Amino acid sequence: MIVMENVCKAYPKSGGRGPVRVLDGVSFHIQPREYAAFVGPSGSGKSTLLNLMGCLDSPTSGRYRLDGTEVSSLSARELCALRREKIGFVFQGFQLLQKLSAWENVAFPLLLKGVEESRRREAALETLRKVDMADRAQHLPNQLSGGQQQRVAIARALCGSPRLLLCDEPTAALDPATRDDLLALFARLHQEGHTIVLITHDLSVAQRAEHRFRVEGGRVTEEA
Ligand code: ADP
Ligand code: MG
Image 1 (spheres, rainbow, N blue to C red):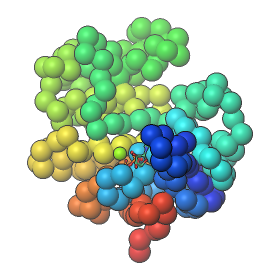
Image 2: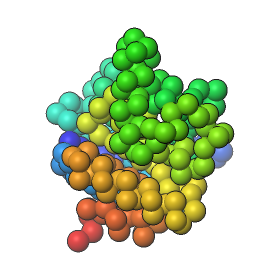
Image 3: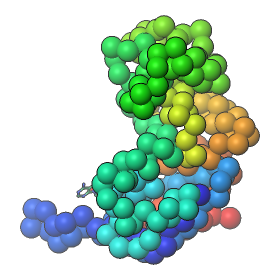
Image 4: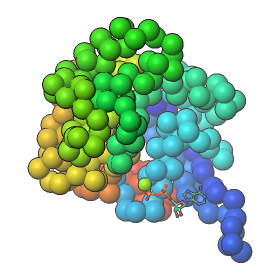
């Protein structure tokens, strides 16, 4: 699903300092249907790595293949199309549209694809059922708890049936009990055949995944 070979990422110099090399020769792969966690301290390059995996940014050098497509050579427009087709994103801050109901948030990617309303609604309700939120379909985000909002965000990520679910600190804004509920949901989605990649600074979150990678000092190493 994901193959990275010797990937480097540097940010251009700013404020009198030289270029910042964040990732310095990173190689790993992730198989379809795997559940992988990347763990590392704050500032170690986890979000940079997730942005690369998610085709939101391009490596400075090295090769990246996503689901058989060589990403490094694609234009911004092609990256956007690839992202829309293959990837569902989940973020720490949920990123729901506040004026849309739960189901409308979930269906939003389908709206962008031009799917008609009755089919959008049907698909959204189906996906909300998967995350145990079908009974809150009409609620606005501010009428939902943090954990419930994150479930809606996960449903939105899943709605277009992406090949890959990419999650950046998905539980960091939640209390411990809600976090555990959400981790149980990720475990269930994994069992149902989804490919999940999650980044976290929290070792106890990473321990719930099937494979763990450590991000530190510009390198990524797989843990036994
Ligand atoms: P993490 O998610 O592990 O906390 P990040 O990937 O966000 O780490 O950041 C890694 C390093 O790269 C940090 O030192 C950060 O300051 C730097 N960095 C991140 N994004 C940029 C950017 N757009 N321009 C310059 N430096 C950046
Ligand atoms: Mg980060």
